[in-house]
Structures are given as C-alpha cells and as structure tokens.
Length: 592
Image 1 (cartoon, rainbow, N blue to C red):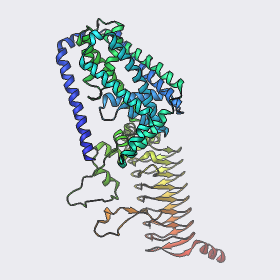
Image 2: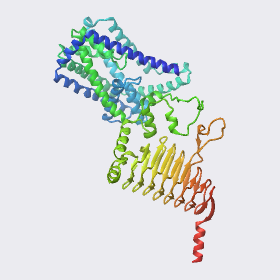
Image 3: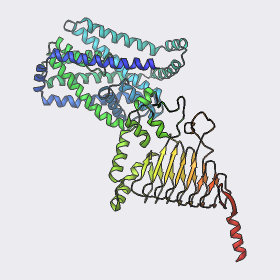
C-alpha cells in the first residue's frame, strides 16, 4: 500500500515536471516579445465569439450525455448534466489531481442516482464515441496535410492514441478478456476491481443494441468537433492570425488527440506545445498558436472556477470518497500504541493527518461542502452573538436555514453552539435559550428532534455520537442539563427536567487493565427512555439502559440505575421506589 502511494506520488510529480518543462520550452521558443506583440493586437469581436463558444460546447456535450443516460433508464435534466460537466473543468483545469473530471462527474451522478455502474458507463460511452469521431477526423486531417505536418513524433503520438483506442474497444466488447484476467489474478483487492469492472462492462454493453442512442452520440460528436474547430478558428482570428477555416479544421483534431496523452497535468504544457508546433507547421506564427492555447486555457480556468463553486454545494470530498483516504493518526510517544478506540470524536479527528479546514468541517459541520460551511459561518458570525431585539429578529429570520427543519414561532437565544446542525429538527414555538449547545455528530442516522413548544434552558447541552435524541411536545429541560448518547435518548411529552440533570445513553468499556479506560471505546445498554409526564428534580442523574415510566417523580440528587415503574415516586443513590402517585391520590380521596 505504501509502495503504491509512493508510486502515485512519483507519477504525479513527474507529470508536473513534464508540464513545467514543456511550458518553459514553448515560451522560450516562441519568445516573450513575440507573444506580447500577438496579445496586444487582440480583436475583441472574435475574442467574445471565442468566449461564447465555451458554454455552447459544454451544452452540446451535456446533451449527448443526457441522451445516453436516458438510454440507460436514468432521467437527469440537461441542466444537471451541464453543471456536472463544469465541475469536470474544475478538476481538469483548476485543481490538478490524479482524479479526472470525468471520474468526478460520474461519481457525483452515480451517488445521487444510486446507480454508479450505469453512471460511469454513460460517461465512458459519451467520451468513447467522441474519441472515435476525433480519431477519424485527426487521421483524415493528418492525411490531408501530410506534407506540412509530417513528423516522426507526431506520427508516433497518433499511433499511440490509435493503439490505445483499439485496445480499450476490444476489451470492452469482449467480456472473455476481463473474465480471463479475473480468473488468473487472485488478489482480493484486484477481485473487487474486477467485480466493479464487470458491472461497468455489462452496463456499457447494454447500450450496444440501442442504435438510436449510438447514432445520436456519433452525430452529436461530429457537431461538437465542428464547433470545437469554430472555437479554435475564432480564437486564432482574435489574434489576427492568417488562418483559414480549413487550417483550423486540420489543426484542431490533431492537437486535441495529442493533448490526450497522459504525460502532463491536465494537458498543461502539452497543449501549448502542440498548438505552437502544429500552427508553425501550417505556416502560422508559433506565437499565435501559443496565444490561442493560452486563451483556451484561460477559458477552461474560468469555467473551472465556476465549476468549483458548484462542486462546493455537492457535499462530497473527492479524495476521500473516490480515491479513499488512508487515515493515519499522530501518536505521542507516551500515548498508547496499537489499535485503540477514541471515545471523544474530537480526539479521533484531531489526531488524523488531515488539513485543519477538513478537521473543522468534520467536527462542526459534518459536511465537506464549502457552501454549507460558508452559510453556517456567515449566519452565526452575523447574528449568533447579537444581543437584544436585533439579535432576536435576525436569528428568527436566518437561523432556520442552519437546521434540517424549524417550525414557526421558535426563538433562539444568543451564543448558541451548533454542531452538525443540518441533522437537527425543531418543532413549532420552541425556545432555545442562550449558551445552549446542540451537537448531532455521527453518521447519517444520528440527529436531534425537538417536538412542539419544547424549552431548552440556559446552558443546556444535547449531544449525540452515532445516536439520536428525541424530545416530545411541551417538555421543559431546565438550565445546565446535559443529555448525551451513543444510542438513543427518548423523552416523552410534558416531561420536566429541573436544573443540572444528566441523562446518559452510553458508558465506557473498562474490562481491560492494560489499556486506559478512555482508550477502550464505549458501549450502550440501549439508551434511555423517559415516558410522558415525568418530573426529574434538580441534579438527577439517569444512566444508560434505564426506562422511567409514565407519570413518575424522581427526587432531587437521585441516581437512576434501574427501570422505574409508571407513576412511581423514587429517590436516593441508587434511586429506589418509595411510593406511588396513585396511592397518594387514593389516600387523599379517602381523607376527603
């Protein structure tokens, strides 16, 4: 595993080195004075046409992708396809990584539709049909301009692309090849890959008999590349190049094929060198070709920035979700070594080798979305600590956007601490007093749900870790109470907790003596249930695994370790039943 990581790291930095070398060489050969002279004479009219061509090209590609998805029985709007394409620009142009834009958009679509094999297959078919048309146009263009373009390295580059294309085509169309490899490679990790490839291959071959979808994809690809030629033609005219449309028709497919060779990051350097070389061979100044490449690169960067903003709203983290994070921990020399469990999620996250921003997002937000992070940070910064009527007004207006749902008439005090607030639901006319903390940390099943007209007193803390807290209608949780669980805490209707109560739905493991208790993880006996109309006096402690029956009263300072029957009066450490409310009512009735 470590060797693979080192190999990936070496490949990544090697490609960066290739990009830097090619860029330096091309700029040196073109000459900075010639490049500056070309840029100074830019024709704004054709520059605007070139800029407009970018969204048109993306739209045409998104249209083809949508039709292929429809053939796979996945219905997605063309606007959704368009924006996912723009996200691809972000990863290809703005954020050079080992994860390509096609992988990202396929993964994002597969995650939202819950059909990952079909999503990846659709992207493959969409790209492969385009590649088929591109290679045809490139070979035709090379033949038409053989005298001007003949070069050993250019011929080799085209042959490499053609051989790679045929290899992929034969492998995809022949399931026996994949089956042959899967039988001979017995490594468990490889077998998992073969299973995924099998699903991908099956989904791809399911389109083989859909002639209408394939015909549309081919026609659309021709349309796309004709528009790509127009894009290059307009970009060249923007720099007043002596170029004809036929020249652009020859240059464009050849350059696009060359830039597909994966020896640089995002084609940086390779594209610039290809435009410089091919333009020069066609009798057009190389500085113009380089200027065209820089313009196309700038347009892709702008599209990538826009795609980055949209990607931030998706709530996925590509490295961790697609590539897979290898989570390691910083361990101090005096700490316990080996396989340990952290009871505190903060400690677990803070010891992981991740960026400070990602750690903060995991602790506070529970989402990798930069959009969600900015929303929560700006709202809490603006009105979270604002006192008086202004604070009341702005929190009432803006805070509902922070939660999963908030009912009408709910009041939020100042200086409330929120963690993973998108997993918290609040009913109508609730009051969350100042300095409260609501934390719903954990997986997708964890959360907090408050019913209608629930009061959380000043300084009260509700916290989950892989658990759920539910408080019923009309319940009143006094000041400085603490409710925490790793399983569940369920509080019924009309429940009253006096100040400083503690309700816990978890406990530490402590069966080993060779490992500190805080490193042995935690367990649960099923959580805590407090049924309707229960009153807990001040400083009552309710431990994990306890059910307090309907109508019970627990005396101040008690520690509840066992179930309490309905309508009981209990007190003490541990709490013991001293009587029944029904008996008191009967005695009072007889005395009357």
